[in-house]
Length: 226
Image (tube, rainbow, N blue to C red; front, side, top):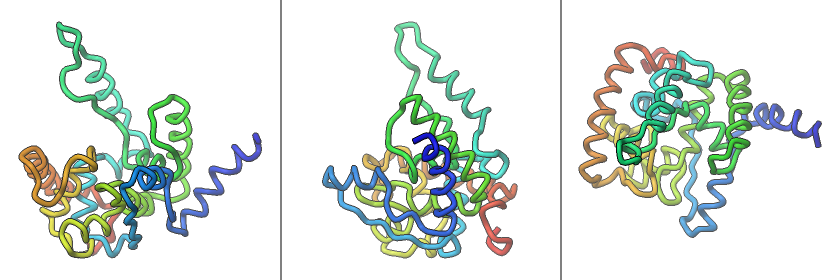
């Protein structure tokens, strides 16, 4: 058992360095819940660079600069979540400090939840994928496995569902809309969005311009895509 725990994770990460993850625990759970399953893998060079910039702008601005963990973002999230108002309630929504690397480790290898044990295993897988996969592969796997709506996994399925186009044809605005729904993909929709998603889309679109200008997506994009 101990040998399996030590050898299993690196072996799984090595396999998925070259093999697309076929299914995840979350996909299975959602299908059992009746959401269906639409998961279409495409290589990163068939995903619009605008989508890469949008998720970096939305989820992890320091993606190319950290080694899996953004400790500054974690500290800010902890400070926000521990703050309380005078009546003892939290001031606004609970924030997370997870990087794209951490989210990818969780999405592909683990189960949903917030236990300390799961977070510990997530950290170990995060270290492994950073060391074995590298940033471009992490981004590729993330964009192909992230939940983007009821029964929708990955940007190819989401793009075809919401915009009737492949992920390679996403415009910057469409990419920002998809990134905008990531925190609550079962609640928010990229097509015909409500006021909050439209506002969030505008902020992500503006930040995507900064990502492009400052080269913050350079580790995940080919030189001709920058």
